[in-house]
Length: 598
Image (cartoon, rainbow, N blue to C red; front, side):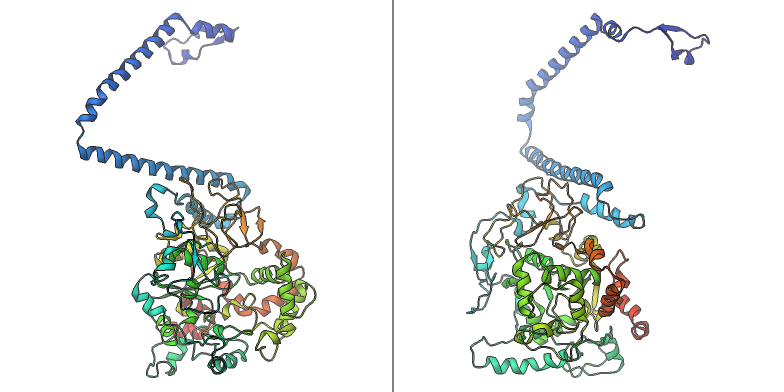
């Protein structure tokens, strides 16, 4: 068989030259000649002799090195080792991104910028390296103290609620400065409200006296929604009670506003808990975060403990003493006013789609998969069965004239109404932290739909991302969560080269290096999700919206009940970046808009 040789195209001869093509086996045998074998043998000999020559001279070269040269080589080797670990993490992250682009990409073409941001975040994850453990936050250091204890700085109390200890953290047991970072922070934040213990003769008279303003404001049932009350008060030359001489200072004063004042949560056993109950303080960053129930508050409390240095930061955080030490509601009135009106302190909050949040509350508290949780709800509200979602919404739509003053009076009336006395898990989000009246005080307002990159942006703004946020790691596998119960969870056991997830960052199903099985932890049950997972959103309510909101009238009723939330939500839901309270208040109110321009 003959073929044309293409070399003729580049030759001076125009006539084609024929070439004979041999069968494959014959051609290969022809190509491998004795001369080729000889060349290969000579090449091997040359390489061998060169290697031998280098090895003969290597001891001489080493002995001639000076001491500082050897140190430089060692440092270079350590740097290269650390670089390899980081490179391995970047490669793993890139693999996940490539594998997940087709299967798990829930973003449309309109959100390419957000998708790019997400990939960038994942590719920049920190990688654990035990040889430089001092660079990592102390909460990730190896466990060397196996005990749990009451904080050395805590006042002695005969009442010990569950999870009232700090575990595996020696500083908490022996250092009276813990959980504060400096003596200045302790001096400010340890000024707590006076409250007699139960059994003290002064307890009942004190509670009766202190509850009066709480009950008065709860009777109003809803806030005024002025959005920028500090601007309005300054314009009208109003005098505030705490600072009688302060005029036109735009002071944020929740005690003068028509809001349940801070501190009510410390007094009321049922019915209302005050507007500032869920503000938590990060004193190192001067961040006051509004943790709204069903909007990731548990994760923010755990992150607060991570920044403090608690090694059991993955434990159930709500009654931990170091968290209580950082609650705004527990502070004395003059300290609260100082923080509210100090521009160095930044206030921040995240808002969730009201429809999704209400469904999440129903699935978590009313129709929980756990029988004990369902029975607890039924007992509190005088029910003998699990009500449907429509029944739940109908109860919330029935307005009441007054708040029940204790859980004894709750029963079914405690479920009626969306007001100050509603359960915090379905109380409107704008009722919290003064959002309805002092929105301009908030430097950062984010959306839970964009929590991954907006949480990171928030922490970068206050200086917590580089120090703690990018190192945050959580484990959702019960086999990995060592400890007795959810109050004493041990820190994660990390291995060299393992990527750290980062606070509020997304993990993927194929994240083989994160030591997780892509399930969300709900303290006792593991809920597997098929989509990307951000820790803590365990009811997966977003995927169930269509099945529960199965009629237009039900959806419209919820939108009407949470009208204030929707006004705020509609301004931020499609915004990729964080919003400022000044910007939002100007859009929500024409009065605020005119005052902002002045």
